[in-house]
Image (cartoon, rainbow, N blue to C red; front, top):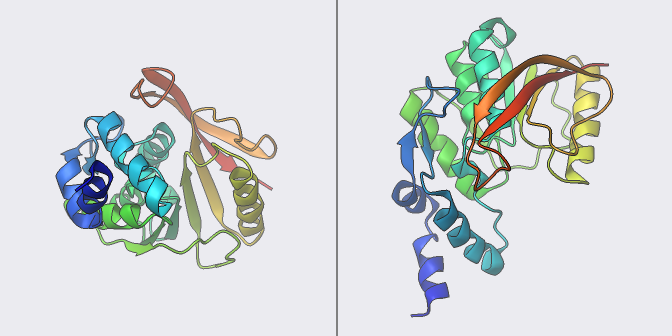
Length: 225
């Protein structure tokens, strides 16, 4: 069996792959939450990059607690009134960190959305690990105008165009229908530049192998009309 076929076999089952390749860890800024994360990031990244070439799967963003998601989660846990009793969408959920934080803060319900099948499985594992119920979808929700979402949480999604522009247009349309949109971002290039309000900043410990610094100054922003 070739190395490529061996790699494909190892990750053909997302559940088994996640359990085998991750550890349950606490994100530095959000120790209240426990997640299945990659403790040694580069081998995991390279392994799934190999599968990406064969099957078109995205890189394993779900295996890392990115700075923006940590910032949003910290803010929600410290200000539970933002989500308490409300219906929340955790968009681009990845590990499910923001959605789990929202449930811990008293949200009525959370829908965690990510188009990556591995992320969907990781979210399910992480929700169980933290004892909170989350609904999960693999559907691409951009352009879906669901007015039941009262709060939308977005962590670290402003990293490339045209995706960031498409997301911003959609989020602003939801704001016009009454949604409250919070974005966690450590200064990515495509963070919206207009009609955005900074709520708080955090220094978030990161991995230099993934980021350009050991600590990222990361803000939580609210999109406004």
